[in-house]
Length: 365
Image (tube, rainbow, N blue to C red; front, side, top):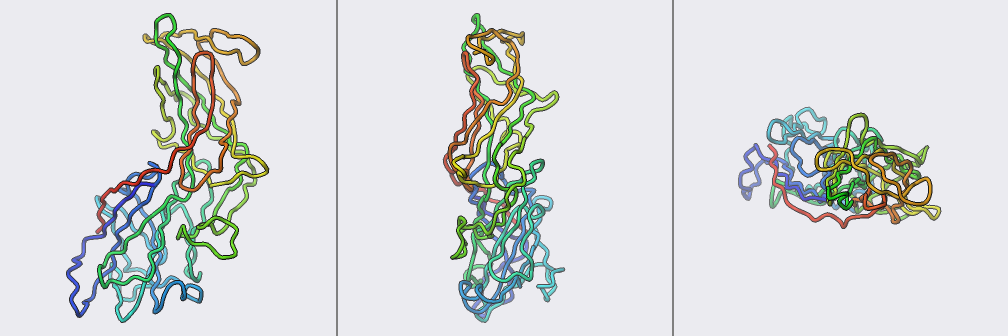
């Protein structure tokens, strides 16, 4: 998903001398984000978990090693920069606000996750690869990211640790398109209200994700990065995108994103075709047509209750069905398109390609 470069500053890093004086851990974080769900880390907090050891992570992680550098360490946005304070951590006996590096052959592995307060990180008593637990809240959905593991590093080259974060769930945006021909020489504007999207067969209500999206147990049948899945108690879930006086108006030959542009992108736990069915659902809404002057105008539409065309200036459509027709994959965005054209109102589903990466520089102190 989008690349963010995060540099922790605010303490003189200095130049490492041969004696390797006391120095502190900083984070350079890239976010491989495949959507605009989180396009900027300003104002956002995240968490860090880290380990130190003698040896190599692939070996020591198979034994008894628990977080001993950072555990659920909060990195906060304060004012115009990010800051972390490890002085109150039981893992930091030095009492300094920044965690010092150790020398003498000590190596480190680091993990990061976002959002800090909406997922549950694995406990300090858990050995080896850390993970997060997330329960999907249909009324308060969030964009979940974790970092690729940074393993077996020290500060012989730099005090900074480079993270690459990846979006771990899937996103669905809803678009409305207006391709109605002029009526009596006047362009037609489509207005939508009381729009509800219902998914009929959501499989999961929760997921446990390894913080490293590439990690997997050898015996696991799940995709890399997935520790476990929680089955949904009810497969149906409805989302009200427009209610009350809320209206989306779309001019001639225009298409409007009524979710992503308004911070209402739908978040879904990735799922594959099951029992012969992909993710599917339906849409219900009210609509009206107006001309350039804002006056109601009748448009010929296919009669939903029978054959033939009828001229309508407003109406209701209930339970227009859609089928995603493909697996819902981690880190990909999908689009439900409600299209108005001469004689027809249609609903179709498409998926975009994976989002291109881009760099955004942000500083930490």
